[in-house]
Structure formats: structure tokens, C-alpha cells
Image 1 (cartoon, rainbow, N blue to C red):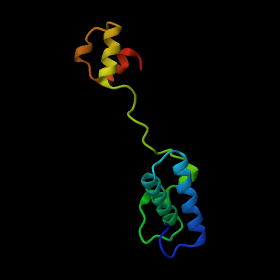
Image 2 (spheres, rainbow, N blue to C red):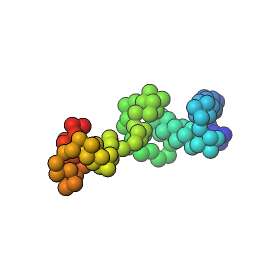
Image 3 (tube, rainbow, N blue to C red):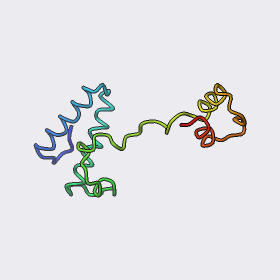
Amino acid sequence: MCPAGSGKKRERQYGHIKDQAEERGASQKRAKEITARTMNKERARSGEAKTAGKASTRDPKSASQRGGERAHHGSAGPTRDQLYAEAKRRNIDGRSTMNKAQLRRAVGR
């Protein structure tokens, strides 16, 4: 539930965010965590929080507007081993001494 002293609007927001997270398949524990983080950011943006981080107050978009833009989406492309395997398949000379950036250039990625 929302922290004590929260208004009816924050109570509705909390319930809505939590329900959406659960609908997307998050466990109850994860849904509560997502909801708490979102609510904390919204409270910081509106000046209701006692402390706030830079990202919470300086970001021009709200969390709902941003829609996960900064969420971690995995590594930046294939691993060195995957690039090496592709270079080997293409029979590229000198592949065993190349680093990831060199392999990326050699296989054209």
C-alpha cells in the first residue's frame, strides 16, 4: 500500500501502476518494487519527497512518458566469441589476434 499521509490521487496511482506491472507478468514482489520506484520518482518530481536524485528531478519526461527508454536491453551486439566464430566461418585471416572491435570491422558489423 502507499505510504501513510499519501493523498487519494497517489493511492489511485499506486494501485494502477501495480496492477499494470502484474498484468505484464511481474511477480507481486517485482510489481511492488516497480511501483515504489515509479512513485518515488513522481513524488520527487512534484517536490513531495524529502530527498531526490538528479535523474528524478532533471529528466524532462516522466517515467510514464519515457516508457522504459533507459531500461537495460542487454549488451551492445554480439560477443567477441560470436564475432570470432563468424570470422572463422568466413575464413578471415588474422582473426585469432583480433580484439572485439577489430573482429566487428572484419565481419562488417
